[in-house]
Length: 293
Image 1 (cartoon, rainbow, N blue to C red):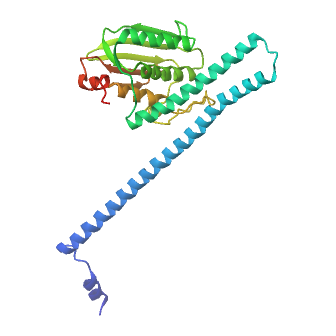
Image 2 (cartoon, rainbow, N blue to C red):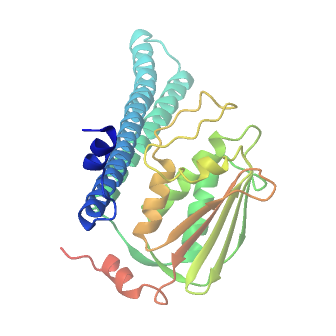
Image 3 (cartoon, rainbow, N blue to C red):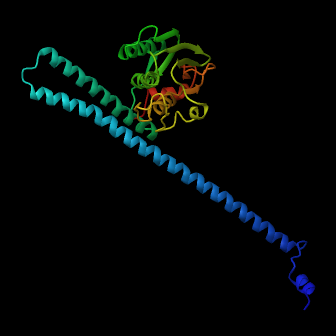
C-alpha cells in the first residue's frame, strides 16, 4: 500500500455530518472543561480569601479582648497589693477599669450584632420617632463620648420627618462610623454631617477628612472582616466588622448607603438614605413596629 493510499484511507472527511458533530462535541467539552476549571478556581480562591479574613479576624479579636482584660487585671492586682491607696488613686483606677469594660462591652456587642444581622433574626426595639430630634440627640451624645468640639464635628441641616428607628442600632451605626473616622485621622478629627429630607427618604451625608481609601479598596469596605491597611496607621486595631455593621443596620431599617471618594481625594464620604414614615416602605416599617411573636 502506497503512502498516498494510507493517507486517503485514514483521512477525516470533515465534510461528513458525523465528523462535524464529533468536532462540535469535542470543542463543547473543551469549553465546558475550561469554564469548570475557572469556576473551581474562583470558588477556591474566594474561600481561601474568606478563610484568611476569618483567621485575621480571630487573631485581631483575640488581641482586642486580651488587652482590656490585661489592663483590668493589673488595676485589680494593684488595688489588692496596696492597702493604703488614696481615694483619688482609687477613683482613677475605677475610672480606667470602667473605660476598659466599656470597650469590652462595645466589642462584644458588635460581634453579637453582626451575627444577628447575618441570620436575619436580630431582636429589636423599633419605634416611631421624630427623626430630627433623635438623630441630633445621638450625635450630641457621641460628640461627648469622643470629646469632639463644635469644629471637629459639624452638624447642619434638619429633617421634618418621622422614621422607624431602633435607637440603639442607629447609635451603634454612627458610633462605628465615627470610630473609623477618628482612628484613621492623622491630625484632629474633622467630621461633617448634613441632614435633610429628600423625596421619600431622610438623607444623611457623612464625611470625614481622614486618610480615605483607594478606589480598589472602596468596593470592599462593607465586606465582613475586611480591614483597610493604612501604612500611616499600621498599628490601628480593629475587627473588620465596623462598616459591615453600618451597612447591615441601614439595610435592616429599609435604607441604603453609598460610599464615595471626595473630589479632592481627602477622606471618605457616605450618603445614607432612610425611609420616611409613612411615605416609603410602609408595609415593611409596620412589620418592624409590630413584630410577630
